[in-house]
Every structure is written in C-alpha cells, then in structure tokens.
Length: 101
Image (tube, rainbow, N blue to C red; front, side, top):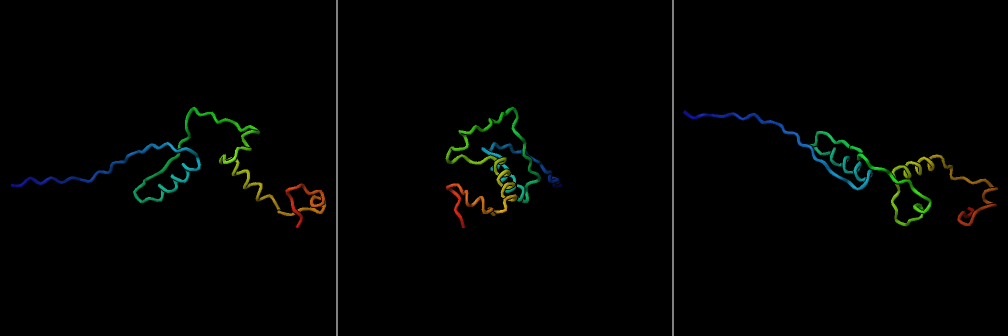
C-alpha cells in the first residue's frame, strides 16, 4: 500500500531590512513596495541615535544641495499663502530681481 502524505501549505512571513539614503527616497520605495500584491505591509522606522545637523547660513548657498523635507513643506506653505500680486508701492520700490509687469 502506498503511503500518501498531505502537506498543508504554510505561509512564512519574512522581514526585509533596508537602508535608504534619504527620507524622501524611503517614502517613494515604501509606496512602490506597498502596491505589490504579495507585500503584506510596509513600515518606516526612524533611525536611532542620529543627530540631525542644523543648517547654517553657509549651507543655504551650496549649489546642488537637495532640499530637506521640512524645507519643501515650508515652500509649499509659502506658495499657498502667496497671492502673486504686488502693490504699486512694491513695484515702484522694486528690487533688481523683480520686474514690473
């Protein structure tokens, strides 16, 4: 007589740990991974024991320096608040980089 063995499929969940060079890239990667059907969940963990260096005035003028997430959020906030209009007094006193329309 043949011995028949029935194997029940077991689901094994594995955890993958990744290191990404920026928060923006980590969010983009997490969004991409979460769209995959076989991915159960995606979690972002903040790194431990990392001190963020505060920006100095010299840091603002470095060409090619990527903006931080906080700077992008601040820019979006300022853009929403900006009406894009100038008063006559502002146009008359215009700085060199502001052209009168």
